[in-house]
Image 1 (cartoon, rainbow, N blue to C red):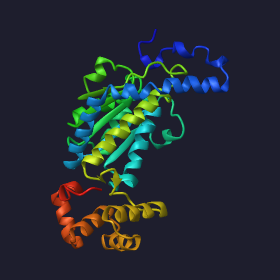
Image 2 (tube, rainbow, N blue to C red):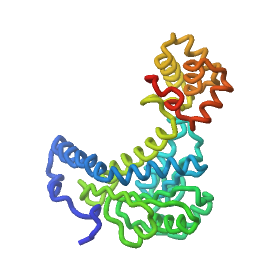
Image 3 (cartoon, rainbow, N blue to C red):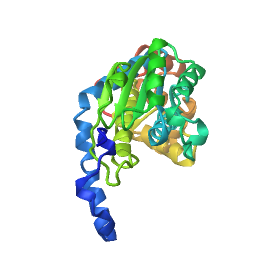
Image 4 (cartoon, helix red, strand yellow):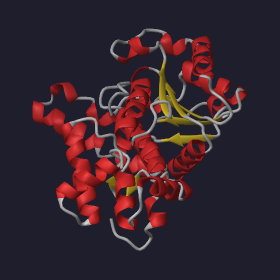
Length: 299
């Protein structure tokens, strides 16, 4: 029997091919409900990853997600959503997938078994000791991911592995941190796009969102560093400034214009009655965290 949890058969779904449509839905949903608890069991290790990511960003480093197949796609997905959500530079969080961009939409057979390609990809990305490299491998055994972590270690970067089955000693040896979310056998044996994929997305979302919050990219639970690149986000920006500052929408719009479209800057300018340059200086001194400037105010 394969020792990888993600490759074992699920005794609860052995007759799923005999189930009705609603029966299939119920079986899948019952398995999905186990995912959140499995992620919660790794809360302390995920919190460490959040702290490391924040430290990485504050020291001028970058976070790299490295994976193959579904794992790689989830890393690229999470990385791609950081700029519009938090106004971060696209280079801050990057996803590297075995097989390159083509693997995002079409399976690149054998790409996950090419360790030399992983080393080349990390070198091409210019990984340095200031960076944090997170390998993602549902089974914990993907050669591409292990080689990437080995190369990251050689380059002096911090490393972590996110897996849904206990990784072998060789992988753990090159990871400074192991986040192992054991979600159990899949509904369809070996289909890690299901529970393992859901768990992985939850972990990655938490790492990047947590780090961005600690960087001051939210005020309370409001996105104050978003990039207003469409009508919906422009409307959201105005609503946030109006609500936080207690002013009409037209005043919020004018304040945003004076702040160059920055929600965070507009709030500080309005709340502290400061011109743009002075508000920028104070925000910089506060590490970009509004709460440090307005500790007694409520968002």
